Amino acid sequence: MQMQGNEFIQRFNKYCPEWLAEDGDPVGLHIGTLNKEVKRIMMSLDVRPNVVAEAIEKKIDLLIVKHPPIFRPVSRLTTEDVQTKMYADLIKHDIAVFAAHTNMDIIHNGLNDWFCELLGVVDTNYLFHTHTVKMRKLAVYVPQADAKKLRAALAEAGAGQQGNYQGTSFTVNGTGRFTPNEQANPTIGAANTPEQVQESKIEVIFPETKQVAVVAAMLAAHPYEEPAYDIYSLDNLAENFGIGRVGELKAAMPTEAFIAKVKQVFNLEGLRVVYPHQSKESIKRVAICGGSGEKFYRDALAAKADVYITGDVYYHTAHDMQETGMLVIDPGHYIESLCKEKMVALFNQWKNEEDWNVDFFVSETSTNPFSFK
Picture 1 (cartoon, rainbow, N blue to C red):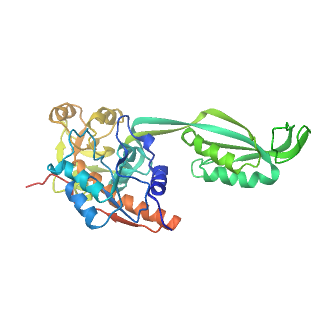
Picture 2: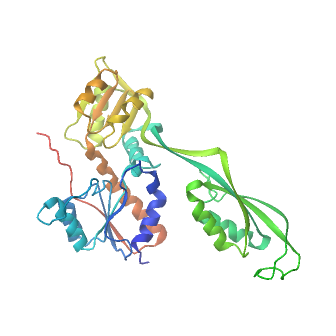
Picture 3: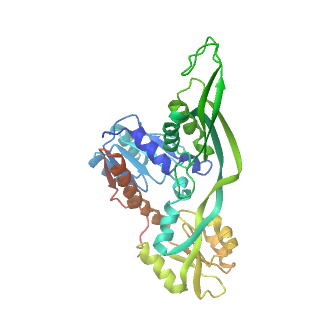
């Protein structure tokens, strides 16, 4: 089945919604258009000139990236500057660029969860709270003969998902009464004639972020010209999200053995370690945040982590960290390149589910600017 760029991003946003990004994070479409057919999609950590050259060579239609290519305003767009020429090259070759940044760090089954899987960290929770999504309940009245169809439409729109269950709902039967006026176009009954119908009341819950989609699905599937429905805000149910993760190793490891494991699982030539002044003989509780997460080190402390793993630790911040008694490992920013293979595996899973006629590629270009000698 041929696929439009908007169709793919709609599926992508179900998994990694843009509203989960931190405030001010420029996620979403950066270059080009999604209003076109896409046959070849590539995943990269960054947009760099050599990545663009790879995309052109592979005839890529859509480039999905972790790091937004236009993170700061561009003052001039000239082809004489290699940094901005790549934008012109992308436009010239009709390659759209879509970025998912901190939302990929925050989502469940996202980048920080994949880090924990590699390191054997279990029983995880988020490191720093970012979002709370409240739940709502829809109660809608429908003729009993149409109840099954309506329940299916609501489930398809994302209503009725509770933990490991989907399509949950409650139905009770009763009698609905109404009188159409002369302007009405009733499915059942006639103008100015009282009517009563055996109806089902269907109740489903859904996250507040899905209200527009759920109500639209209900209206589209409902046989009535004017469906009767109520929406309630629920105070007893909410879903929380956060950046970073903290959890436990199955068994404590000697500190040096754990440092070696970090180096091995991320295939690193080297890493930076901030040893506390107090000796840290073993590691059991681990906190991690991909990218530049030094600002969350106090949250790692509050979570009683033995070690905090994050990139781009600033010199003076490292001094502060050293006084806390917590080990800090800086493996660099590039460990986030794990997202390339993980995301393409997900894309191919969706392809099999949806029968898409599209090919997905992992960028083979390293965008790590650092080498160890």
